[in-house]
Length: 136
Image (cartoon, rainbow, N blue to C red; front, side, top):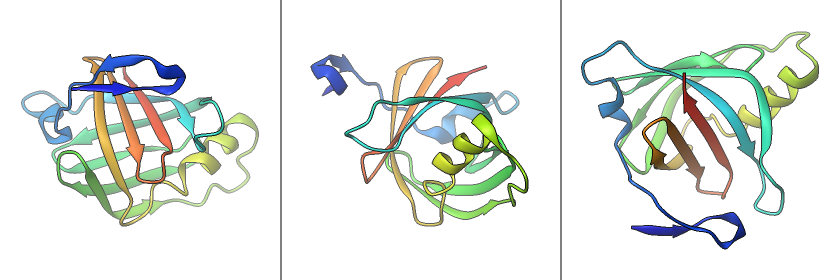
């Protein structure tokens, strides 16, 4: 199915259930490469935030602290059991990344899942915010 992306570009988006990402191999590691917190703003690059997706669970870091949780569904997915640690004295670019991700990664958050390429995932929040991940 085609979708119009920012800038009017049309791309073919192949939806793939997140649960199949960990079918037979160890859970792959994904790096968060950008977060777009508003449709009126461009996506911003992120610090070293990573996530592993295994079955219907995810574990990773916001750049400042650990994050874990579960999800239901294929696309859209709904988050539950989300735990984000205290960022403490984390500052700079890592703190900015944490502050962008933390409000999106909450119980009940819903995301559409797009897979523009084998090595890329785009999570689109119901509010329009996006999290872009690249396979490491």
